[in-house]
Image (cartoon, rainbow, N blue to C red):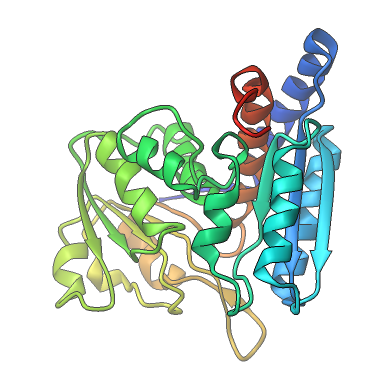
Length: 288
């Protein structure tokens, strides 16, 4: 059984980005730029935005953080996005989710220039990803795919179960696995007899926000478990959607929580920002 070390892999990716950013500056005179918008005072979101800002600085990426009060109107947020779309120093725009309830998330995400959509949530990028065309891929599923690659985990022909069907993780994850020629089953809260699906799976990816939902007796021997969930227990301890201790002896590979998929997200966001900077020429004439 191998525990996949997301921290170590994320550090490797960040170093790859730092080296490439330096080369881009020296050869092309381009400094990649990322703007993050935080609306409201959600503590977890603020911590995450801070981490993104620090990671950008360490990689040599120009970083801007716009912190707005929860009273910010949708029109004000859209005006800010328009300004950022037209700022040539910015290659990536990321609006931290969730947004306050009075703001329509879809309208906001669709307002971002697709060539600056480093979160990969714009319908343009979602459509291209589903069609297996070059696109910005949402950072968390992108990170999971890199984990498979780094650990030589074959996807073609494998039975994969994705538990959770969110737009951020579950749906893009299923598309990426399908593009890799895996046989994919997507389960959700309405799924009957979840264990019947997971017991047949070579690979299980879980992202539902329910602590310890996945147990060892729900897996077949040698299964790969990727735990995207992160939950804080009453004790303050962070834990995943899979019961790590119960599952690990059944697994060939498993990700821990914390220290698994979580650290990968920022590393892949930096990758997307670097990619966006390399696409500056294509972006010209597209509201940027």
